[in-house]
Image (cartoon, rainbow, N blue to C red; front, top):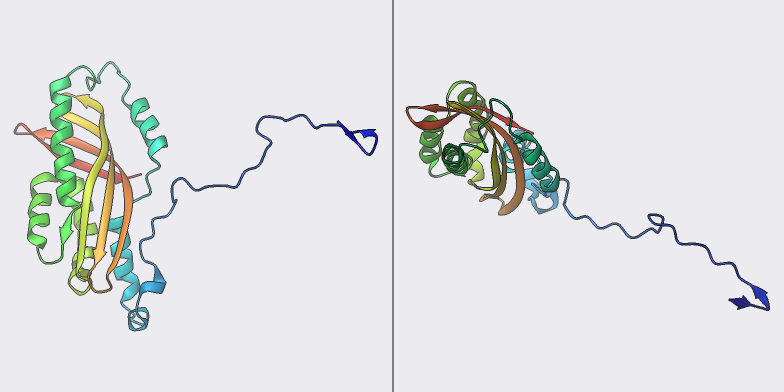
Length: 212
């Protein structure tokens, strides 16, 4: 190529060096509580901070990066000498279905029907998991009436990563949507949970619950 009678050198194109405008595929932080949508009298209320925390705890236990999580799910579910998760298909299916349904119940909530959630938790959780959940749920219970809080949770993907006799471990991704009736603020988020389960009287119950 000639320019002004002189040859012009062309730079070689090197893979990975060309810059492009960044595009956020996943929002790293769910928009739980946009301050600009809150009335001034709510902002001035000294009780807003703890109620916001309670709202945020249920809406987004943690942000789930789905691609990374699926890789972790596959890696954790590799067959070991004491792991029958991929061998005992019937039991694996049973524990998955029962735990998924239970999680959707205990992490769904209506301010005007707290008993449904409380009864589901009492039926599903035992041991440390029950104590952990009660601590969390107490924060929500204290502010649910004034906030008119409603929360809906749905299991997006889950897998049994370990199954040994009457004990199992699961990795669960939950999609959540919540609405505060007092401010008409709606939010959505995701949670990634590590769940320990045990079969008691032919039913699977949660003995440990940890956000990742």
